[in-house]
Image (cartoon, rainbow, N blue to C red):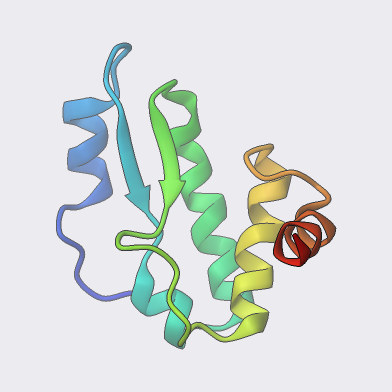
Length: 100
């Protein structure tokens, strides 16, 4: 699952995975939308290899849309917690931000 990407992650790493460069992305929108929570977790684990670059930011190109199943969003953010790029309390922090 996943489908074609704008640029293979390996090519982006080769070009931008150096100190002083910033690159964002990696999360496949199609997989977030149509995959299983387990596939989403594996995708984030695969992206963990890029966190060795100080300028890499894991995100979904174009943002996270409302057609992503809630269980996949939870799997995405929970997997990011294991990498240390999302706070462990993201569920309660989000609720308190929305309440303001």
